[in-house]
Image (cartoon, rainbow, N blue to C red):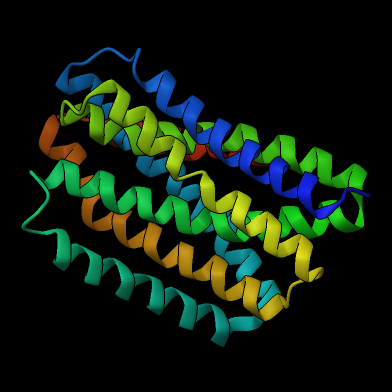
Length: 236
């Protein structure tokens, strides 16, 4: 078993390198409205899969229906509050999407860190596998956050920096997970459903409408379906 310091380092590496690589990859993606519309749809489909098959089912299993619903409602309320506060500050709708998506990914990374920290503390072999799996699936999440920023012509350095920052909560969660040991299932359920609530609202209110605005054809819809299928292939 690992000590708390090592576990915390693992958590930061998993979060920062995973989302950071996603941001780096996004810098090499071709910039046309049609391509970016497709990729934004792909983002929506992938995030929809995470919510449907990963976050919410685990939340229901760990904490039950009521806890998960409370978490979803709180997550949606957070997005609405943040949305209202940044409405005048964000340059446009696409930039607002990126900010909200970055917040939701950061929120989602925290309970993942909790799970990683407690796993590495108790079952080091499984924990190492879990760490690698989390790092790999953080890459498309980093791309998901970076695409709206790329559409908004954000500077490459800023894209890379912001995607790296969204991985930090994984390290914080890993430290807390290792320090406390086996975190309360109800608490983890609340965190997971909270992240699920933020994501599903952003997908419906920001990502899909913006993808259609960029290009009115079927590309974004095909991207949504493909993103959902990619999620199934990567996670199941």
